[in-house]
Image (cartoon, rainbow, N blue to C red):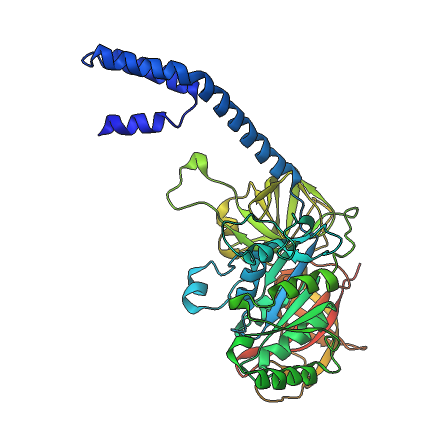
Amino acid sequence: MAKKKETSTEEELSADDLRIVKKKKTTKKKTTKKSSSKKTTKKEKSTKKTTKKSTSKTTKKKTTSKKIEKTDFIQSSCNVGLVGHVDHGKTTLVKALSGTWTEKYSDEINRGITIKLGYAEAAIAQCPNPNCNLVIAESVANNLRKSKKDQKGMCPNCGTKLNFKRRISFVDAPGHEILMATMLSGASLMDGALLLIAANEVCPQPQTREHLAALGIAKIENIIIVQNKIDSISKEKAIEHYNQIKEFVKGTIAENAPIIPTSAIFNSNIDIVSQKIEELIPSPELDDESDFLFNIARSFDVNRPGSEIESIHGGVIGGSIITGKINMGEEIEIRPGYRSKEGKYSSIITTIESIYEGSNSLSSANPGGLIAIGTKLDPSLTRSDQLIGNVAGKPGTLPEVQYTVEIEAHLLKEVLGAEEKIPVTPILKNELIMIVVGTSLSAGVVEKIGKKNTITLKLKRPICALDGSIVALSRRIKNRFRLIGYGYLIVSE
């Protein structure tokens, strides 16, 4: 049985390899009949020339196509967030638009909700046919094929080969009330957003209101409203729900946003959503000339348990480049950095070993999209998102680490996210306030209330942020931190 397996695998190898192996076999097989061995060698001689030519051609084609894919990969230029109340279909919509299911952790799969920020990327393509000009996400176009045997990357309307237009990244934010801080940190990475509202629930739900306010605080104006789960209600109910949405967004940043009825689970109107993303959420002007600044939104250890020491990879940080450019082999500094047992923080300097967007390797990276940076850090430092909220930059270029911050605060009229309406009262001295700056989350006690709505907080965890950075403010109400306002960071020189 073992000898039969050897011959089957040998036939898949190149002609040169076959010749070497079979010479060895003839020396071993002395008991075989001469007549049978001669017949096989004659057949081999007649087929060797043809197989050698065909196999060498195919292997050349394969190697060149792989090289083209790597060098031709274009980094994402825009981050699109998916926000809304829990279980309104955000992750399912990401899957429909990109082909990627972002819930990957056991807790997320077991509970059926997003807990950590999820990431995916999709290519936006356009039909070159002047009579068609369809703009659509490539994954959506592939899902619209009549048969799985049909070629991928073709226009679903006219059958023309689609042309690449741009690549976008999706940020899937959690919708549960206890994960609002995670959503706020994700909002700092977004250039535009899809606000999902389930048609089978009354609008607005608590986190629908809270997430829309968060988009306003983050100054995200390019918004598309997705009326999801349209398959679960009647036409009359859908129209009634549509009117509820229009009433809800009146006077907000999303007042003029289009409302698209969809069923993400049945891929209904997903092509319209991808067209509207291209139309209404443009790629921002990116600054790759300033100092490199990278917001860390995730950090993890990619090594499997029991890995050999020689094969262990360094820690990985994930997030988005705000400004500047980075190349493989360059040094970066991470602040606030490592926390010692005594509670003191010290910055970390490391070297970049790899850069990835999804499964695609990059030699350098610019602003736009979500990337992962492989470093020489001890993986224990990056395990379980330990470096979330840190920023990375070229050594010596980052802002100073701040243990006490001054904020120009602006309070909302009502507390957001609560079931009932609760008016926002003024911030008091010695009150505990939670803040989110970029991807950094901290909490501090109010030490001073100054003029012009300024407050001074002594933080429990330091931050590293630029002057003028947007700050989300939350206070504890009924054992939950609720969004009560926003502000701007004042960094004294």
